[in-house]
Image (cartoon, rainbow, N blue to C red; front, side, top):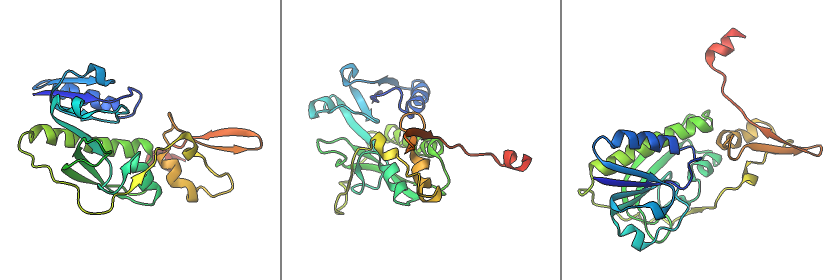
Length: 219
């Protein structure tokens, strides 16, 4: 099987996971990982993972299936960074959807869904690891069941949409408590969009890390 993965940025935290998946899948399939659609060579499956380019119907027609992985229970939560917005809403139970790419964002037919549950303490790297592991499971599912899947249209719920997050969405309020802003601290990417606050004429970045049980017991 010939498989292409298009991920627009090598700095995205999912990229090393994709590289590992490509390494494993290349034992039995022809797999390419590219950052621009100009480098796509066509084939059986195209995975669009954090892709920022417009992939037209003509682009998709070069593949047997063009698939997107989206971390919400579609049609709820279409749009940008759904896992972050949902955690900020106080949710710990999420759904990851594998769907067909379509002209209208996140509107394609569903191939599969997987639940993901958090405990409310996980930080950005832990959240990513749990989600990305499920993303790879869904990629495996697509490859294993290619040609046998009967895609299902998204259900009749009214679609909801999330806007694109910006660095401003990582702003903390120095007057509010840590507990009131803990979920924002959890989802803020410490490398690309670190949490920050302005105070007394200066801007400060805030990065948190989890202390291991052994470190606590040694204190």
